[in-house]
Image (tube, rainbow over all chains, first blue to last red; front, side, top):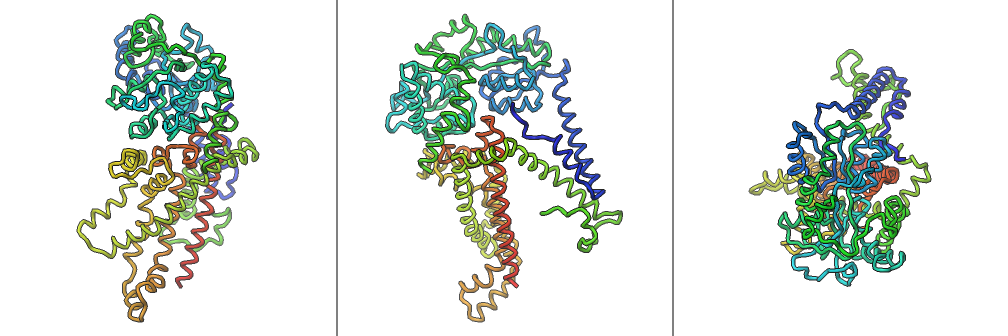
Length: 356
Length: 279
């Protein structure tokens, strides 16, 4: 589906074809060839997976600490993980997915939204039945929460509190940050849960975005913006909120009654080594699930989750992206987040035009 | 920078002496062509190819979408303001650095280049902390268009200063003295003697500052707030890439490049004119 930004094959032939001036032409040809060879080598490099090499873990930004400090050392102590070396890369989910699709070596990928995984399935790098296990390929969960200032001075408890006069909201821009889509889906789905019609729910999204005083490019930028003093509420993942508190920020968080379950998928690539596959399996073991819980993420393993119930209370109106109110990622991406025709794009367009 | 046409060797200008014998000029040109191709031309050609991936219709739809238009407009207007401020303040700074003597001048002179060395995202965070909601100096311009202009002023500061400074150093003060002795006031001296001499350098600095400003990303990332009404073109393009709309992103980028090209050509023309006017 997606076309590459970089098309060396076409350009190389174009450059090589035009050389009537001999030396320059020859140089251009050499140049074009070396570009082609370089690309070829890079392509080969990414597809070969020697069993002795490190496990390339490519993941979205926030679980970096849990992986580096907890999960990887724990895996290396198991018999399967004995002597395993890791090469890790963390960054925005969409960027990571694109990088892997473009040839960045990857054995285990962990992304923040399912469409980023689908992107790799479409590229033939991840098997299409990656989600065929009892956890549907999801390694940990979180929920969308309201991060507020210490003491919750504006007493933000419900979604409706966010659109009260004078309340300033910070939420990452959904077009820059795939993970921010969870926030919008949470806001929309919560309205449906409360019995509103889809039209009313969209109207709510519009007022919510009108209350947005900043829409930073990523969850990290949004937290920086919020802790710099701007806004009364930050829409965020529960895991990020816990992390921010741990980092000593003067914030607390409120779990709204109706909110979405954030499910982050992980998979191995088609040419991953056995050890890499073992590492992925390890992420679902009770031991690793407890490490996720310690790191602020909701375990997908039911018994581990139950053990950590006091830390992760169940909101009464919890729903998932696959609930009928939203209808799954594919529908959500078309209906809400299509950059030209999605309803959120339309709302943003109106906000930009009315004041610009 | 038009590449030399094939077969143009015959009427080429007299060869500079520095080239070694063995067809050195052609080799040099070939090297330059290959280098420019690798570094600039091929990537830009790929970008243009990508931008028309959805046909010319797709290109047009992408660049005329309301958000794209508002982002492009905001970028150009803020960049124009930034260039105007830089032309005045940059020239003034260069003037003070060359013509004035004060303690700590050497330090000030080195400080000018710091915006180049600082990673722009750090510049953005610093500006946000200093001129944001919790501003220690009581100035809150974050998440406004003023904030964008300030961030761009920060990152483009050195261009005009560094372009004007060497010219000012070379400028013969006897000309000014002659003008003064012939009865010209300071204003006339500036208008008739100093400005015409500095104009090409100011324009060169302005061109660089403009080109830098329209593409700037890191420093405006945080301070703009990335709201629909404060989204500059680079952030809009980034959002399009993140949303999987590569073609739209490329189309807006190419539009930005075309605008930059036109502006640079106009500035080049102006420079030419000032040089002629000078004589």
